[in-house]
Amino acid sequence: MKTNREIFEKYADSATLDRIVKFNNLGAMWDSRSKEYASLVAVSQSDASLTFAQLDASVSKLRAALKEAGVKKGDNVGVLIPNGISFATAYLAVVTLGAVAVLLPPHLDEMTVFGCSMKFRLSALVYNASLEDKLSIIRAKNPALVLVEDTASSDALVPFEDVEPDAPCTVLFTGGTTGRSKGALLSHKAIMRGILNGCYGYPEVFNQRYFLVLPLTHVFGLVRNLLTSLYTGSAIHICRNNKDMFKEIAIFKPTEMIIVPALAEMALNLSKQFGKNMLGEDMKCIICGAATVAPYLVREYAKMGITLLPGYGLTESANLVSGNPEALLKPDSVGLIYEGTEYKIVDGELWLKGENMMLGYIGEEEETALSYHDGWFKTGDLVRMDEEGFLYITGRKKEIIVLASGENISPAELENTFNSLDCVQDSLVQEKDGALVIQILPRMTTLKALGVTDIEQYIKDQVAAVNATLPSFKRVGKVTVRTTDFVRSPSMKIVRDKN
Image 1 (tube, rainbow, N blue to C red):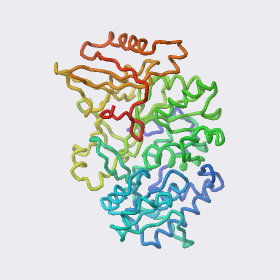
Image 2 (cartoon, rainbow, N blue to C red):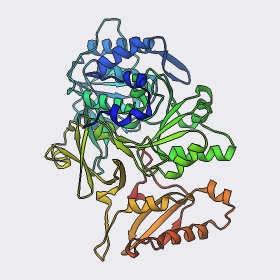
Image 3 (tube, rainbow, N blue to C red):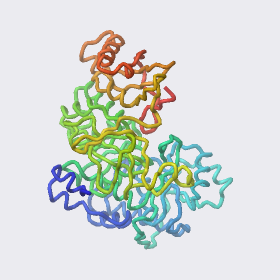
């Protein structure tokens, strides 16, 4: 198997590649990076900024406070904190103590937070005072749970725990392959591999300025955004309210962003509307994923001098499985598979194994077993691969539509075909009364630039032109042109059964 260096060496110089080194665990990684980049800004938000040394001091004080509260290596510790410096501090404090950080999205209600405390057998919970109301049921029904406010600190000297690479590290919520929310348990080795994968495929890796708007309880925000930033000695600005996104971008002037396609679309539309780059003139690279990236976005950002790179990953794989360094040449591909990930394609479905894969779903032994076959994780994603090793997602196995004729239809594959139209921002193919129908969300900036007045008829004509190129069984019938966005998940994917 080729190494990442061999796979991606033409996209960065040797000096940069030499700096990408592997650590056994996050404690060793953070200990090294916090010393190497001590004087550089590590993390900021609208009202505060910390250097690597200052962040390490905060991490050390909270780590000591957790130990004094009785937290031990291997304990499961909940983290219930909104996006911000406090989250970064708490996460690093928990995992460098050798405990397992169970990341609880702050939007959970108090009953769900209580349920998680029981299901994941939490020994402690680090929380922010703004979410105090989420703890009411825990205080009443689980009084043995140690509650530690994120401001807790101790001056005791508690070094990081040098745990084994296979030691459990983090629990992240995922829909998995069945769509039901579960807790995926990732090892230090898996997350370290996810961090390293984020360093390959583009030339300027170290000492960048990252901007974060994604939830830190999501694998894309945690691993590819926060941890890869810290690993590379970069500064990361955490936007705590997405309404302030563009105002804070103008102040922080980021060079890198990790975003989902819907946010990329919004920033592009605003840039066209106001006639200036809303992401700032310093922006160089966008890593885009968690949903299908339209080739239109790759092309349009390139016109603005910004490289937009699609990728593919899963919570269960500690984020990145593949990344596309040749987005302009292959804009509909999710790229080359990274080192440390073995793969095979079985009946069109991508199966994975390797050091980046999860240890299992917590408390879901049956679900874990169903997700694996002979050690291979069944992603549920339908794929193809070209002769150069570039991966393409063609759909989801569970979403296959079986027509009365017996033909199998991948709605995602059809949607990608229609989404290749510049006038289509997004689409949803469904089966109604035995026929294929499509909902189209038009890209209004493109239609306005074309001078289109009858939007509905124009879209229908464009769909008809695509239909003419498809086999008869793949053609869509009724076309609905939406005037509002689709119902989406927190990761901005279309929720199929709610549209």
